[in-house]
Length: 215
Image (tube, rainbow, N blue to C red):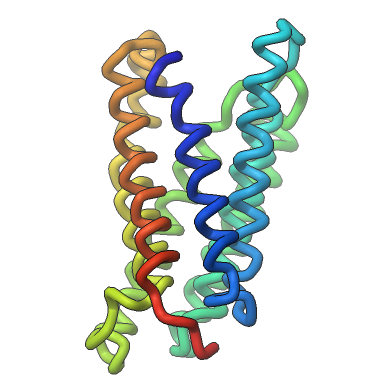
């Protein structure tokens, strides 16, 4: 099994740890983060088993939908988390623009069909807006008492993992248009595995060491 293939096990471990510490955040909007982790894990293992049993399926269609669902939830999460009305408005604008752009892209450009390729445009646009949303969140907590115990704040660890992953992966997603063979190389597998390892590692650390959220 390649390093890329091991990512599903990182997802499984993270979902399990998130389940163990679910009570810490079960009363907040983060409670939907756990089902998202399990959905991602289920999709990855399903695709793996289908490949093992040589069942033919166009998985880009599934991943295009899954990517969109992830972004929508994360925008809503940050919209609910930040307190500033101005920041809320910006994140809501990011969500609306993303929804409109994704609809146009899937309806007329890349087209969301079972034979569709992975939509790098949707992924990249969502990543840019997500990084901006995380930036707004981090700026806000710097001006609150949460900065004094950020290492015990679950949203900080989730944001750190997401920010690292999406900031680092954007150049590689864009490069696929110019270096399509790079996606099947060992370097690509190593990079993607490392990014996932850091991201899911941040999630796990957050689940374990964070304090129970108050809201």
